[in-house]
Amino acid sequence: MMLREAASPAMREDDLDALLIRAAAGDCDAFVEFYDRTSPRVYGILLAVTGSPASADALLEGIYVEAWERMRGRSSPPCPGLEWMSVIAHRHAAGQR
Image 1: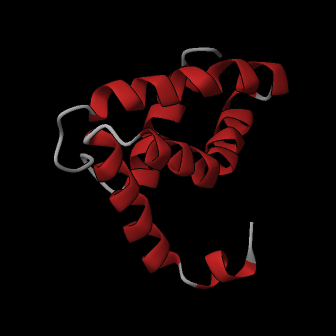
Image 2: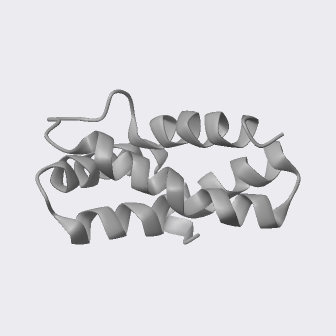
Image 3: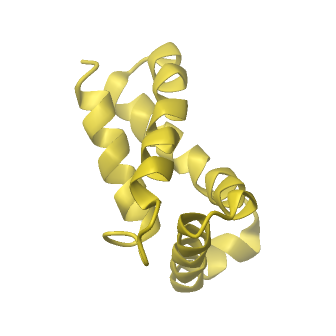
């Protein structure tokens, strides 16, 4: 994580939501950037819940596939992007315990 990202969490949330909105319109590059910026946090959630790096690795891709599919045609994420991804991650990880 870069220091300037950590210094401005409110701006970061807005940026993440903007990336999801662009992704919903079919912008694959925006979704890749969203993944790059959020996957370390999502992985951390998966690891904390499952207690297994192998399980966390195995779940990570499926969570983002689900998010990509659920964002199609939406004008905005159902809640702030990182919060939404955290909920999806927790649901997937809890199913692995």
